[in-house]
Length: 77
Image (cartoon, rainbow, N blue to C red):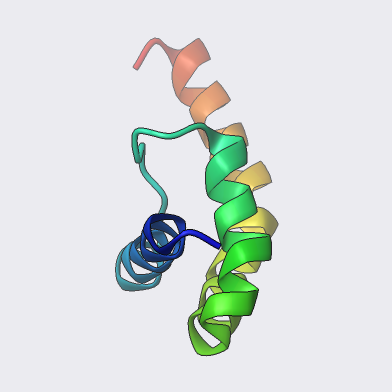
């Protein structure tokens, strides 16, 4: 695996762990997902375990955030 790809995967993981959120990283969502779910597991197992917890929490809560966004949309906020 390329050192640049491993470095990017680790940087993405550290950001997500520190902020508990995702943002635009200048690469596609599928690339971010592949970096965090496949590549990171092989290059840094400890980071992988931490980021997996954050992503699982975000996935569990996303239906709530979506409902709140819809409510704001129809209230005109």
